[in-house]
Length: 307
Image (cartoon, helix red, strand yellow):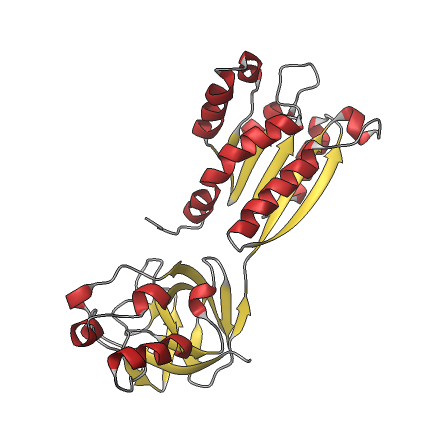
């Protein structure tokens, strides 16, 4: 089924229903003239007629578009099944999903005062404006789910020479894919195997561009060819020391050799970067802890307050 806009709505005061209008103008602050516009992540609210019709049965009456304080009423997609960082293109406008649902304001919401419940906190979504323009009823909506760009770089002289099979890279790719799939997130994973060479690693990092996450495996120890950390650490914009410190202490308590790892985590631009040891066992241990922080880190990097 095609996705379309069935109504656009505005209110000048928060906590009140919005009124359908012929068109809305979106700018860098949200919907011009709307009470919810501003320099924050919930600039535009959207609700689908799919949610609308369900709630009409609870209300016992027909509801008007805008009564849930949504700026854009859509048809053809279950909006609350989308994810933060997904995007919608409506004519010239580009919106990025920033939040699914919200805290219910209770008596501060007009529909709640009437019915004692509201669908917006559970099934409404919010977005920010990436590209401004005009939206009106009848406009077609194009939906673009976020696809996470993941790069896995294995550093090993012997594996790159074909002397043995790289196993740590595939293990890393499998574990991050399993994590993302569990979140219903799509991914595109690219793997590379290179020698323990700083120049080649720098080229791989530069070619990664705006990847969402970069993992390296190998070269985190103190051997003469272990150059991964020495190359990546000064390249980072920000280091995230707590992750690797926690991992070293957790596994080093039983296996002191784990304390010799110099692995680092950090940020380059909007890219998360993690350097992992070269053994499959270590990759599994490190990834078990790293994935606990990934979604929060991604949201923080993209300016989304999910608290």
